[in-house]
Image (cartoon, rainbow, N blue to C red; front, side, top):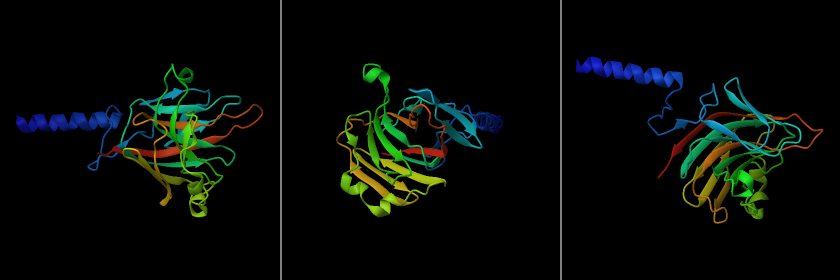
Length: 220
């Protein structure tokens, strides 16, 4: 009877995971934030860009005249390691928010927090203070490094790794170390992960950015 109950429980658990009702973590604590099929667990904030799932990727598409748009996790994260792959049209700037928030009392709910840059102009992987009034959190000296500027490959899938533990934030783009800073400006220690589609003016676009294999594990 005990064996039978355990077998049934295991079957139910596997069924729930397969249906997407449960987010499964592997033995190292990695969790898929995006299941490759739906946008369950994510909510759009700000802007009128569109998000859809195509070929196992989240596809963000610009909308003329829209401000910045963000597809955000429903759960907040503090200290974590995050990995994802991204490909972006050359004319589009994008980013991934970490430890971010959207509060009505602050700029009418505008998303704010540290942003890991996605761009084809040599700034990919550096940290920007989105709507914080700080400008870049990464230093001018760091952003002038030619090796770091060359890490992002235009027109290709690029692999990002982000490690945020306490104030230190580090990033890698295609295994090249890029950002390495102590964040003492943002004031953000926890918040959602957000996928940005940058706003564009009227008469431009449309442009797209794609993310896949978005994984996170919390660290202590």
